[in-house]
Length: 66
Image (cartoon, rainbow, N blue to C red; front, top):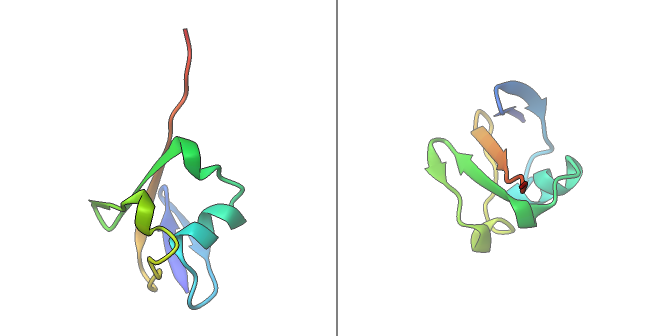
C-alpha cells in the first residue's frame, strides 16, 4: 500500500500497523507524536491502528535542548 509520510510517498505492506511502520523507519516512539489523516493518533493505540492505502501521516519528533 502507498502512504504519505511527512510529505513523501512510502510503501508499506498490507496489514501494517502504525507501530510497525515506526519500527521499520527506525523511529523511537517515546519521543514522537503522530497525526494520521489530520487526527492525532493516541500512542496507546499505535499497535492496533491498521494503516490503509492512501493514509497521510505526519510524524513529529520532540527535540530537547537548552
